[in-house]
Image 1 (cartoon, one colour):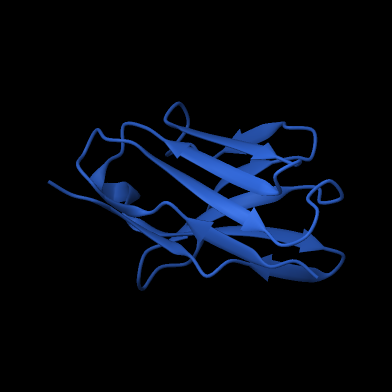
Image 2 (cartoon, rainbow, N blue to C red; image 1 turned 120 degrees about the vertical axis):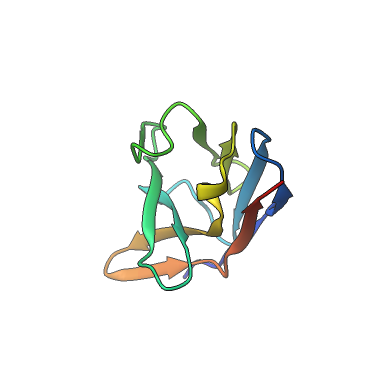
Length: 115
């Protein structure tokens, strides 16, 4: 079983940056894909970024070139570096992984981009 805890959200002006972290309670060495999702109230959760155990990444078109996902398996931590933030990036951000048939989610961290 894995517990995921996100941190690093907050209020930032357009064009600013934030780095989100997701700390896993267990070892990440055995976890394959780890994902970042975001959700705006009233809308479905959107996949933002995926990173494999080996570090290959994939991004939603809306964040390509601005967001970078990374993971430090030794520290059991997943990161999302978000640059050039836009108001439309405002959402609750969640980290996620699947082990077997079980999906694991963090509690989410709020990111608000506003002047």
